[in-house]
Image (cartoon, rainbow, N blue to C red; front, side, top):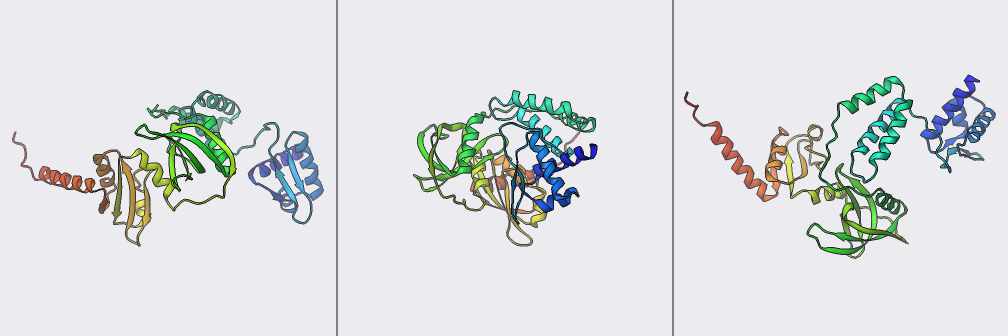
Length: 319
């Protein structure tokens, strides 16, 4: 009985980790005959797991969504990842999800083995959740936008720009993007016939129209660049005189992107709310660089260089 239970649990774990298994491959993984595999699948069905089977040479098994939430099997790393994700969500930027995340976390911690519970507790006790000033978003709105993106369904909504002007938009949604502080919707604006990025907290009354569209791809790097641009007063374009593998370990933030120009140089695109911050983050990379944009940053670096040079040649202070 113990062997049967262990085998069925192993079968469940394999089904949860893979979209569809060919029958012979699944039986080989479990080291059982096809007949025993069919019996084990039937045991899972009796427990409420909707396992779908297809026949024929290409037949196999897959775990489908059911009407109820059955138990999940998680390995150690998956359990820790979910616990950390729930803790992050409890202090995140989605309205009303904090209490739900804490309830789910409490249930998960109750069944965690002691070795994993210690790891999760260490992460929690040594991490400080900093509440930001940024606005939160409605989880129902996020779900609506995500579903429309998945189903290639046009969205209609009102949008308020940074300067307060409002307009009606009809958009073919591409993806949701999160910077950890804010949520954005990236999509094709049908009226402006161009790609646009919208802050989700500025959307009003989003509605899925039911009209389908053929999906299209934005230009390479557009999503990353467009998400950073709205929250940055200045956008910097800088050549770094170092190989890509060196620069990749020193990126100044999640909104920065790099592109290899050749074996020895890279192009950095990043943003900041002030020239001082941009100069600091670029200078702290510890690499030789050439600034192309913005012109204000070039001028500021010249003034800063002169100031630093003057400070380094100042006479010693007399006692």
